[in-house]
Length: 295
Image 1 (cartoon, one colour):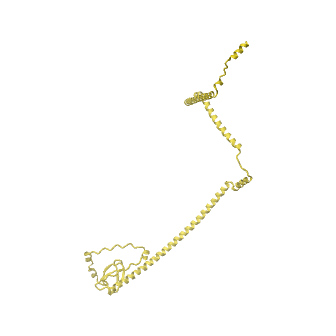
Image 2: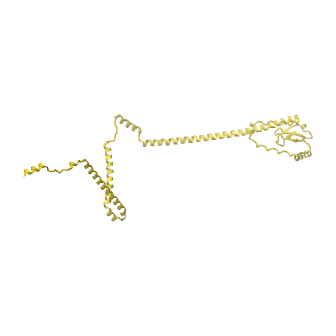
Image 3: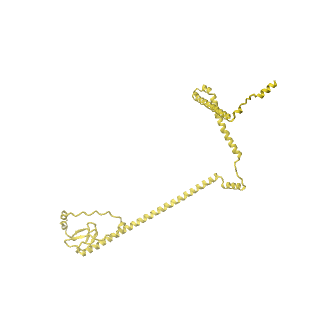
């Protein structure tokens, strides 16, 4: 006789004499669900007249908890099989033993199915891993080839640039040999004093001539201010201001020259004694007598 759990679907093979004619309560060793099982071949009317509806009306059976989401097969294989709950005390020990054996057999069958599925999945994973590894190796080879080509191109460009720079720059060895030969001869390259003096003279002459030229232009503008105003009336205001400034400068310079001359004269007067400046000779009596005798 086959027993099927209405909750989890576990199947059990038991002897026909285990279930009496009136039926009995049985419990699933897998999920712990209990239900009333009738003997195989009992009339359908008995099943209809079961007091299940009345029992449900008086005391509604609690709803089973929602089943958890199925976990991946790999995790199910790694987890240990749930221990079978002990059969209720009201069951016959023989029936409990048979149910336990059926549960073990069912669990072994499920484990075998899961093992086959895991093996196939593992093979698929290995194939995918091997394929991914081959793709990675091919990408690495391509990248390596490209890298070698890029390095070769970079080396060629660097060599060409170095050659061009070498052609553009002077030969270091030649310069060093020249310097060494000069040091061996004890020659020292000093700038010629005449060249330096000539450069200084040229700079002084250029600055002096520039100042003279500017002063000459300003003097010409000052002297020809009236003629420029008559020829260009718009320049009357700036030229008048310029001539006024020059006149004020001339007056200030004249005052400075007068002050300098007075200070110099005062200094000379202070340094010379007063007697030295008096050159008048007074006649004496001796001179008068001499003059009378001569007459």
